[in-house]
Image (cartoon, rainbow, N blue to C red; front, side, top):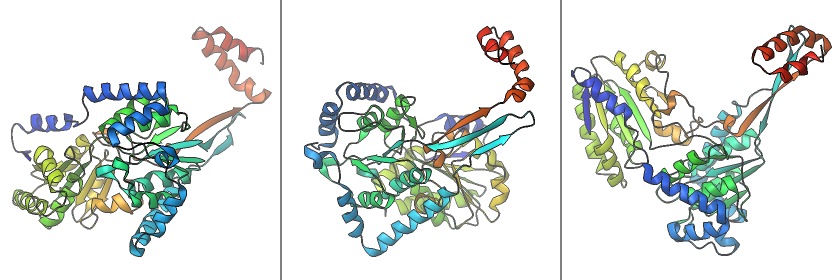
Amino acid sequence: MLQLSTQNPDFERQFARLVADRRESDTSVARTVADILARVRAKGDEALVELTRRYDRHSLAGDAGWRIAPEACAQAFEALEPSLRDALVFAADRIRAYHEAQLPQDRDYVDDAGVRLGAKWHAVDAAGLYVPGGRAAYPSSLLMNAIPARVAGVGRLVVTTPTPDGEVNPLVLAAAHLAGVDEIWRIGGAQAVAALAYGTGRIRPVDVVTGPGNAWVAEAKRQLYGVVGIDMVAGPSEILVIADGQNDPDWIAADLLSQAEHDPSSQSILITDDPVFAGHVADAVDVQCSMLSTEKTARKSWQDHGVIITVSSLDEAPELANRLAAEHVELAVDDPERLFSRIRHAGSVFLGRYTPEAVGDYLAGPNHVLPTGRRARFSSGLSVLDFMKRTSFIGLDQEALAKIGPAAVTLAEVEGLPAHAQSVRVRL
């Protein structure tokens, strides 16, 4: 665990190194993924069979080997323990309500020159949702991807999820039923993203691929952007907690570990103005970590990538936060608005001592698919808009063209495009 202080003369160099550390895949991953994509594109289903047998030890034999039937999803939902089923429905309702408020409005108006202008929004025809398996088999991830797509009006929702050794996570199936997924394919990794992008004999291609995954999935999405739309290239999870000494160290330690347990490459950072409190949090992390079933992952994440930064005043924290542009930022102070007003770059911000990041992972409402790797500087979390596109339109009559056409002719001629100019001039 790295400890920094803004009072240290070497702080700027150390902090700049922290900001530059992306903790993401190397070139060997990119080469492997490129080979997988090429094989799926060339051989389709045959490549999927081979790669699924190799990486997931699962045979894609018969319809049951390839797909999970809607009836199985309905049965999994009904078989849930009632309190768990209620919690899943409660989360889905909150996520749906938040995303319904994101739906954009069409525009249609006539300006002062008499030109009709506007734009119409349409959902994409089909969306592919990647749902991790193995360590990261989370029903919350499926809800966070499928519900915004449904709210947007996507006609066909396709899920790909790996089933290592043939094992299926019933919670994922229950969430798929609740969200109204149309197809579930038992395929994971870069090969699943390739199948969604290119299509194969069995799987029809989609227009957008979203959802978190490991380094190979993220790299596949990066390489296939342009063939399909993607939500983002996601890296390891991150949390930045800005906290004063009035907090309970156990609360803050639990918040830091909530992201550390995701993956050994996850990163948890604490910024505080109280060095004594910082020490108490470090001790609490050590104690709590030993009690977690995810101890091995959480401890490696904290030891390799955890950071505690002490500042002379929390007024220094927002600018440091903006440079880190973290996925999650907690403001565990009495007056979070004072700091929040100065934070420009963050995936999602959690305001006050009673707002742990974990509520955002499950049921607060905003999406938990968020930019990582400092990408919050220029991108946002998953939303309804990731499943929609905007088509602008223009309409002129003779009078309107007479008003704006001459300027178009002038600009076309100065750019050396005479056919452009002529297409306007002949109508004037």
